[in-house]
Each structure stands twice: as structure tokens, then as C-alpha cells.
Length: 98
Image 1 (cartoon, one colour):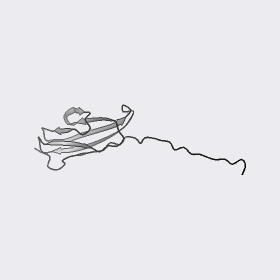
Image 2: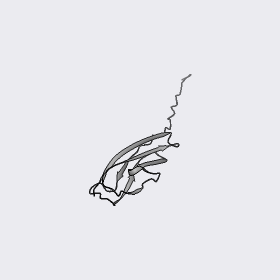
Image 3: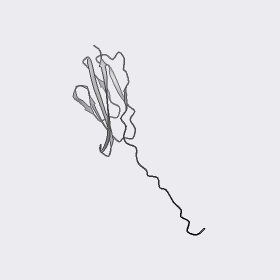
Image 4: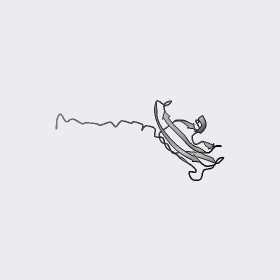
């Protein structure tokens, strides 16, 4: 057959966007002075930034924290790539008992 056209499709290799995910190593009966690991389960990231209770920050992948006052505290994880050009954040709360 003359004049046949062959089409070739090229698949684009697009990196998925970062997705923030974390859990607390302990969620029940957390008491003042307990050490908690923030278990990072994020995907597709190279950059990490945490905002911790009482204005703390860290860039550790899965940091350990100790809270010395009772109350309800927010923890925010931001993961990204290309120096946070693409990023995703997640905030969770933890209750610390006296």
C-alpha cells in the first residue's frame, strides 16, 4: 500500500506532584514529656519543612518531638521538589495531656 502513514505516539514523562503525608507515632494518651516521632509517608518529594508546636521548625524527614506543656497543638508538614517550586502541605493536630 503506497502512501501509508505510520503514527508514533510519545508518552510524556511527567513527574507526579509532591504529596504530603504523615502520622504521629503515638496518638492516644500522649502526655507532657512523651517523645513522639512524626512519621513521614509523603511521596514524590526532595524538600521537607515542618512547622512544629511552639514555633519550632525542622527539615528532618521524620523528626522526633517532645512537648512539655499540655494542650492541643498543630503540626504542619510541607514537602516539595525543585526547592519548593512544586509543593504540598498537610496540617494535623495532637492533644497532649498533663
